[in-house]
Image (cartoon, rainbow, N blue to C red; front, top):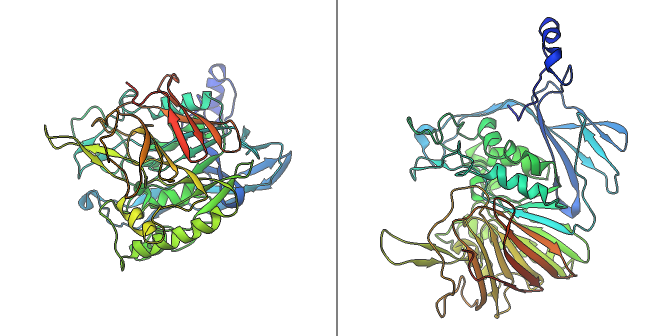
Length: 467
């Protein structure tokens, strides 16, 4: 079920015959453990384990009972957008356990494994996104999940962990194994699929294990975690807030609640906070007054605006970039530049033509399967996209220099642009001042492929395009 130890608990006779080959006689049950950061910097320890009861967590030498966040369950069938005829119930045959971590704690372990504790002022941050292996019938997209070069999230996670971060930010889209691998396709043969635990484990927890153990995480939500898709697993496993009936994505009738949630802020020292926004249900097709999403995202903007007034320096986190660009091409036709998310631009823009509150200086996003940096002379915050950490890459090239007048959003004037298309890796941010960060773009071997700087609202990079 999880990446395993070499030896497992066995009946006495079998155990006796194998002791010579085992480093230890008895191992604890396989499990996944991690720490997720939530509102006001609250840290929550999570453990996912196939056991009859939650284990104790030991904090500063004192054992405490962990609470059951979600019991083992198989959720009643709900249709899925990717291929409704291939839908099946989501099975979660394990407990999700949790416990709050007190501020200032010196150490915490669960089942003998140390948990990473949050730092009041993290200096080194890893940013990744779009990490799952795409198996999608509706688009006939079947990534070679069995090939570490074609699906390299495990390598990305290991290299990012070796960088020794204080904090990890995932900008969303963890789960991509929606449909069964076609017969005869050796690249993905045998892969689990659907929205239950087996697919979640294969897509995220198993390949990401090294990085989950390295530092606390901020878990933003992507469109692949909307209610009709991987929302049940997202709410069970990743969101830092309490799991509430009706917000768990278990029933279609509750999706108006489960698809949306309030933003929250995480202070990271020096008067800087991260503001995490749930944009799972927006659409590139756009939203208009009267649409549920239009009203929900206008409400989201107002709450983000209020949060941003709590600190002078703010970094926003959304899965969908408002201020980033992509590219598309039909056959041998010309390359067409794509703008930022239309749904968010329309909802946020109805309240502020600048799209984002003035106190937000930088935006971190994913969704576009590449790496990108954009800075503006028009007062908009810099946009960084880190969607290149595992999912099949976008391969239509972006220009080294944008054509005159090219913009990701109405009124946004680009003055610095950099990208890396068709390359896997991760991004790091290292603090250099109250509102200054050094940004590095790393490849699968951890090699730095581009160096960038953030200074307030502006950003720039050494290379306009990584080649």
